[in-house]
Length: 364
Ligand code: ATP
Ligand code: MG
Image (tube, rainbow, N blue to C red; front, side, top):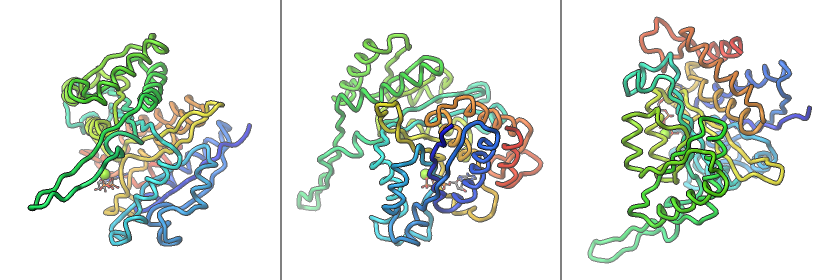
């Protein structure tokens, strides 16, 4: 059995604490003979700036390129507020996404039954919720040219952002969504504003053609992005896989995240194009940030980080069984009433980051 190469980038704030817990799970999976892993460690964000003066070094970029998966915890914090723009902590993240070509951002919104009361919606609307939002990550209005502010004189300025999508960009993200749906509940909701935007019109046309050509077995529906925003809070369980552009995906995935009740629980995956062997560059990270307010206290919730490792098992290491086991272990410890402080609610007491990691390993 050849070893999978993981580049671990603990980063800043609570990053190192939650990374340590994910590493326990990796060690356990290795010892249990599930797969064999080779872990490399690197620096990103403020941690890299302090040592190398940049947000990620060329050496660590090379390790990221060579790895089967990058596991990143979190970057940033007030300590680096004043550093030059190009080497700010977040620049490390953007460099990784750009250089690895990670165009598909997968954000599951899963509501664990034990936490359904923490949702912003009524329990019956979210209990058992399991949506996958697929957001296009490297195109659209965040990157399109022209992008500028022009001084018109007389105190007037004009700002321009440009939404650009080409057929190949829509096709490759659509393909990711259809493939995911086949392994889930076989339904894709594609979202844009085809009624008022040319890019939305092309999006719908390309997704429709791709569906007809290659994925007719999957149920496809189109929903305007504003309608989808409404349906998400009205009846979220109607959705399986949602695929949308960079801007709408940014907003809709945050909206979906709140349905599950807690930031400290949500993992994410960012995937690149498949090569001839079906291998993709990939990076896995929690949706939350570095939480400087609780860093170093040993109270951070490691579940989003461990869940991100679970996504790596599913999408990079070809081991859906291990991924399911990790999800079941998370669900199991929550079912037993174990809670870190952020999800404590009415529970009598909370446990530490380490205790949560240990409990998940024990459950596994
Ligand atoms: P970023 O800009 O990096 O996304 P942010 O400003 O959105 O960061 P976070 O760092 O995600 O903020 O933290 C938001 C709040 O959620 C903070 O109060 C933080 O302590 C809490 N939080 C975030 N992640 C966790 C976690 N894993 N466990 C416990 N609390 C968390
Ligand atoms: Mg944030």
